[in-house]
Amino acid sequence: MDRTLMSASCNLAGLYPPEKQQIWNNHIPWQPIPVHTMPEKDDEILAMKKFCPRYHEELELVKHSEEMQEYNEKHAELFEYVESNTGSRVRNADDLENIYDTLFIEDLYNLTLPEWTKSVYPDQMKDVAAFSFTIDCNNYILKRLKVGPFLGKLLDDMKNKISCNARKSHKMAVYSAHDSTIANVLMALDVFDPQSPPYRSAVLIELLKDEDNSFFVTINYRNSTTRDPYLLTLPGCDALCEFDSFSSIVEKLVPNWEYECNHNIPSPQYELNTLSLIGLTVSSVTKLRHLIINITDYNKKSTSY
Image 1 (cartoon, one colour):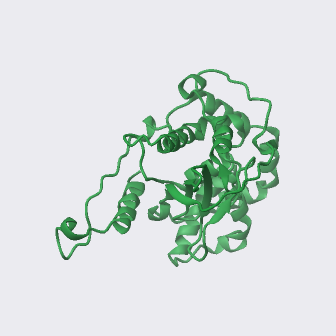
Image 2: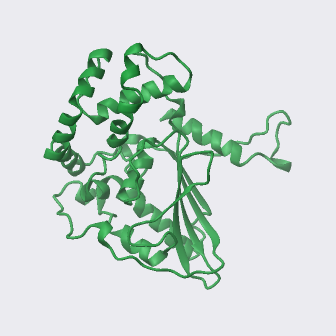
């Protein structure tokens, strides 16, 4: 989307101001930096919107499951109240999140919210809106088909860096995406705390090397400018996760995407959160690689109700 490309350009302008011979105008401290993109309909890695029949089939099963129907019934009164006051169809958490997001933006810009919102916004709507971010990667199949291609690229990038493949490796990869991207990646890794990712959130996945040439991975989540990022612990690892252990866990989520999207692949007989913990002892860890996913929805247009 245009707003994610705009945000990527703004972030790059801040990260890489021109120096010395790069300065082409003394009044404009900026230099052009390419941002690569592709149509959403062709992108299974970042936009995660390339059509996958098996994914949509599984998602419909989740949305019509007994557990989801019970959740919707539990919040039916809230849905009916919001629907009657907005004129928009509100039958589930996804529907409510769209309206909550609009109200949040209006509130952020100090606009006066309608009187009817006072009894439900933000308190009653907040948790339901946050729950909506757990649906797209609600089970193993959804995680694998939604986020698996991205995780596969992540692993390939790290392996190229470890093998010193200079032609295929970079010091940093930056992805400019959406709140749903943040949530989906964290959900797939079983480290998502169900809260709506705020604007400008970032997931930072780093490949590290110690003085013994051993490699490790850390995952940090930045959702506030008032504190340091949260260091997350991948189930099956310590917060400082040995690369081989990280790879072993994440590889189980990397699909043969084109094939699995068109075939019924059964789930394996394990759950990520049942893997045994691995203790690590490390020394003098230095940063080797830095991966950032940056949410950029703060330019989203507001619609009044």
